[in-house]
Length: 161
Length: 76
Image (cartoon, rainbow over all chains, first blue to last red; front, top):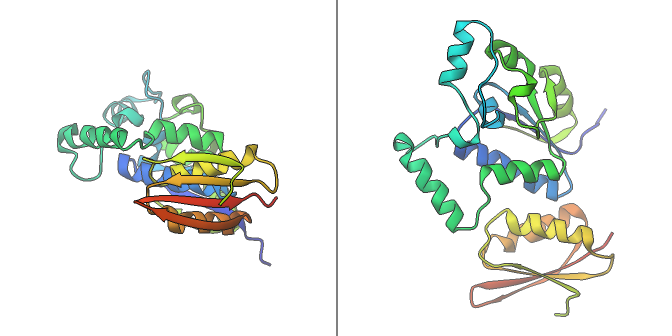
């Protein structure tokens, strides 16, 4: 039975600024092409959707330490190449602004506005001690791999970023 | 070519011209034509792909001095 739809499903595994931008550019474009879009954030990808402000949850010293060292939030994301202790990333952000490109925050807001569903992976959240309150308000909910596969099964296009 | 609505995307790169076109189309009436002006040459392939996948009609692309005028008609 063919139940594929005009739908795009993404696994966002990486937590770097450049990869996050690629994911959100594709997601927002797909939404403007009338596609239904689901972004499933897991592992380092969760850093993209963590709140920029405040401290994160997490029980036990290992999780507390992990969330301190792996704080995340759009402001703290680095590029996968030429980060140069943050200098390269800040130069890239400056060039993006000069080119009138949207910032990652603007892309996330646009994605939400255009109906992109952003989902956090419950397993990684449990593992890393993250709760729904640790994520930006644009994030819809948390779900597991079965939810992702259910969405992917209905999608013409599935990406792993 | 005659247009009912205009959209200036000069200086904007992919995907913004497409995203803004899609948003503009939501406000437009069926049968109206939108003129999009852009200088990112990606629009030459992006707009036909957008029109095809959304079911709107691409009427034509005019190129002049590094700027593109793209005409799209709202079908539904």
